[in-house]
Image 1: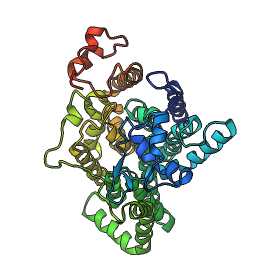
Image 2 (image 1 turned 30 degrees about the vertical axis):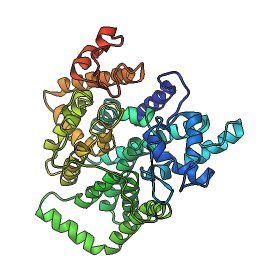
Image 3 (image 1 turned 180 degrees about the horizontal axis):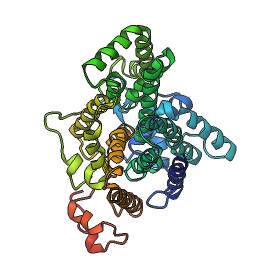
Amino acid sequence: MLIVFGVILVLLGTRLEYSELRGGAAIQVTRWDALGYYQYLPAVVLYRDIARQDWLEGIDSTYHLSGGSIYQVFDLPNGNRATKYFCGIAIMQLPFFVVGHVIAGWTGHPQDGFSIPYQWAIGISPIVYCILALFLWRQVLLRYFSDGVVALTIVLVVLATNAIQYISVDNAQTHGYLFALYALVLWATVRWHEKPGRGRAALIGATVGLATVARPTEAIMLFIPFFWGIHDKSTARAKWALLRKHPDHVAFAVGSAFLAFLPMLIYWKVVTGSWVFDVGSKWEFLDPHWRVLFGGEKGWFIYTPVTVLFVAGLFFMKSRPWKRSVLVYVLLNIWIVIAWHDWRYGGSYSTRALVQSYPVLALPFAALLERALRTRWRWPMLALCGYLLFVNAFQIYQYNHDAILHYDRMNFRYYRAIYLNAHPTAEERALMDPER
């Protein structure tokens, strides 16, 4: 438990450490893509303008949040403008938005949805969700692994990966919030299988629905509870028998998932005139971009190498009750992520689109650690983990200080030049990708 509190302190400390932008300006978390996820709240609560969003230009000219083109919205033939991002993150941000609004009033800041109190409130929100999720996630892991293995797993998953960047710093995008939702669905899934109940079934459905309305590809979260407990024919028969015994639980799960998604349908109907709207997603499933995993630009295995151990853990799951659940989810999720047409995923540290899956990947990773710590590889594994933890902390520093580790211009030559190098020369910096 002390390890969990230590991780919490690091998350909060990282938020405070990097509370200024690279240019020294005050905290602004609702920028770029994050603006698209957040703008539902000021549009509905403050400006009463969800359809045309005429307030956006004025806000953008004051705070410079959109990147200059307000690409976050589409112009529609009916004269309205539709947000291209889904509303699930705004739903999760709502309580913190209210707190920011109240504090802005108390402190004399503009109550416009974007002044400093709002930025701090939204910047703290994913950390709060993830703190709560850490305790649930720990309970799940402790059902299958020792306290020592669980502690090491939590430290490495959060602090030896890009998760810390997207929970604490660039944290108003989807990843930190979804990280918490994956921890929650794991906990609810375990609890339902231990003692089936309507409330637990509804919680599973609501979590899946909320994750989907935050980022539609997260609908594959459904495979976690669906395949949980199945690893052979006999367990499959037992699982289907359990579901047939509780058809009302299935109905509660489906109903709560639909209710979670309903705000998105209502928004589309009001703004576009249709219950369903194509936001322009593009996928290349038959020609996936393997550089997302192995590329010198932002390769997942290159910049967060501990994730190699996450995937290697898939071979150590044996007959765990979550074996098929995790395997199906992980393979589908990685395929979806590497098939996205914009394989760079904008400005980012490593592959940010995989951050939310880390609570799930922690299960096979813990299985690998458990095996290694019981063998002669114990000390080499601990040494490797310590080194990877240090490398990630160093790279977080590089990423947030003068963009030494650049958000969109990395390549293998430049990465080799700056590896564990806090003060690269002008010649070394010149190795950055000139086309980016």
